[in-house]
Structures are given as structure tokens and as C-alpha cells.
Figure 1: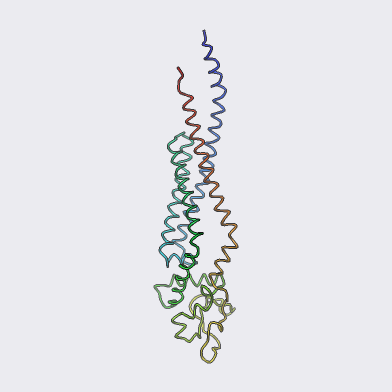
Figure 2 (figure 1 turned 30 degrees about the vertical axis):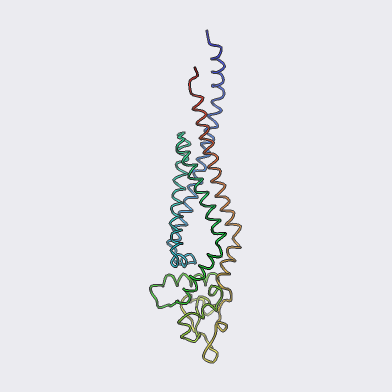
Amino acid sequence: MLDVFVLPRFFTEAVCLPFASDNKVLAAGSVCVLFLLFQILGAVILGFGIWILADKTSFIAVLQMSSPSLKTGAYILISVGALTMLMGFLGCLGAVNEIRCLLGLYFTCLMVILITQVAAGLVIYFQKETLKEELSHIVESLIKDYDPSNDDKRNLQGAWDYVQAQITCCGWTGAKDWENNKILINQSMSAYPCSCSNSSKDFQVDSGFCDLDVPVNGTATYADWPVHEQGCMDGVEKWLKDNLGVILGVCTGVAVIELLGMILSISLCKNIHSEDYTKVPKS
């Protein structure tokens, strides 16, 4: 005679386990979709770090060649990007094969990455004046020692020329910064940086110094130069303000993806634990 307790238990397992299995497959599929997003995100972070190291013609290049801290930051970005891609792969592998250890590792690494990103954002926000002061020292030193004939600093100086030409700015706080340049002092300010020029005749020349057409009594000041009035500090700040919405949107999107990955991974991990518990034979 069939045990009266066997039929209800058999019926419950036959009806409910497929639904549990469907939920598990759905969760695993969701984690794998996030895996793809993390692969893309990791590739972007990795590519950005490589770009910082390889770039030679932008403001990033000026900072990278002048400050070792930015180069260190680039290596950190490369490491984070590679780790993000690896974690996405491990998360998908753990979800498909129901490996709780990999899911736990996936959750832990995501949490560490998220905390690190938040901490970095807070440091940048609260230390922005210190960072601005450091940038000022870097650029002022570059302008003071700018020499087109110096081959050792050709890449660094070329990057700064590119910045001034692209942002349409001159100096860090303004054209007056160039009055401290040693070569221009020796030439009694009768020349000016070509990359600062707002004159159409200088558009084909984006580096070195251009001669001033009509010096005043044999000498001149920065006020006599045909250059942009805006300093590059204001230009960089304006660019950041104009693109602040995009920057915040990207950062928020990344954080949301990471949080979803953490929630799904821990949820799937608990489901695997619950299913294993239901499979234990009852006496």
C-alpha cells in the first residue's frame, strides 16, 4: 500500500520543482546578460587605461608625462577593466554550472569594485582644489621651460600645443602665463606661442613661436599678442560642466549594473542552496 505521505510529497515536487527550475534558469540567464554588459564595461575601462598610456596629443598626455600619479592611475584602470571582464565570465560560469563558490567570488569582487569607485569619486570631489593646484604647477612649469628646439620634451610640448589649439585657450589662467617663458623674455615678448593664435594666418602653424608683426617700441606684452583670451583652466572646467550630465549618467549606469549583478548573484546563490536542501532525503 502506497504511503499516504508519499503522494503529496511526490505531487509537490513534481509540480513545484519545474517552477523553481524555471526561476533558476531565468536568474542564470539574467546573470549571463549582465556578464555580456560587464565584458563591454571591462573592455571600455581597459581601453581607456591603455589610451591614457598611449595618447601623445591631448591634455591627458600632458598630465601623464608630467605626473607619475596619472600613469599609476592608468595601470589601475587597466587592472580594473581586466578584473571586471574576468568577474563577468566567472559570474556566468557560476550561474550556468550552479557553482556557489564562483557566485560568491563574483559578488565579493563586484562589491570591492563598487566601493573602490565610490571612494575614488569622493576623493576626487573633496580634493578637487588640491588637484587643481597640482595641475597649475605642472602646466606653469611646462610653459616656463617651453622650448621648441628641445627634442627631449617634444611630445610633452606638442601635447600642450594641441590642447591650446583644440580648446582655443592660451596658458593655464591666461596668456599672461607665457610672460614667464625664458625664450620669450629673451626676445622681449616680440613673439608668441603659435598654438594660442586667433589669427587666420597662423592656422597652419600649431607649435613653436610666431613673430609679432608690429612690436610696440621694440618690446611688447602679452596684451599685444593676437591670441585667445581664455585660459585653458577655464576651458577644461567649461568642458567638464558641459559634459557633467553625461559623466554622471555613465557613472550612475555603471553603479546600477554592478548593483544588479550583486543582487542577482546572491539571489541565485541562495536559490541553489535552497534547492540543494530540498533534495536531501527525508527519513
